[in-house]
Image (cartoon, rainbow over all chains, first blue to last red; front, top):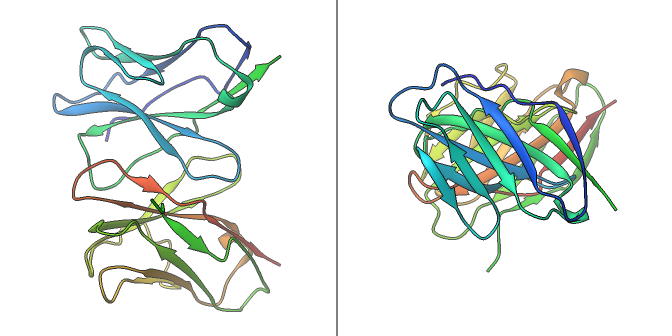
Length: 110
Length: 112
């Protein structure tokens, strides 16, 4: 599975838009990009998945450029409750096992 | 609408003791996964079941780790002769075949 690189941590304030970029230079043709969110003392939770261009759901947007070597998770108007670790994963869609990196720790301040 | 549940939520074991961690998946989910998460790290895959069949156990770190799912529902992860390096959060996830994985809250194991 393709290795991913993302910032270790990010800080933001309530109401701001947060963009977390993930690099995946060795992404394969059949790989999808998936983001998970993890709160303290909880298991990870699926946020969004995409293959190319843009995907949007009620929680976030995922932007994927044409070369697919990176992707950006966009969280609109964050609140304190968005403080969590965000993981970028790359692999075949709905693969049997997930390969997590160290994730990005997002801290939202009032 | 119960999610994945795990028990116990916290377990303290003395080095050398055996422990058993339980996972109750979402009803009807054929796939079940175990992950290990060390402090400050992302989860790492341990093993995977499809119904009662253990299809992948490549992530189990040693032969002290054993998982079973005898009736294709509840699963137990057993760790024999625990060592300090086994201290971690053990996460269970379930899914319909080849779909989004739903994680439980985890069991935090501390080996003293």
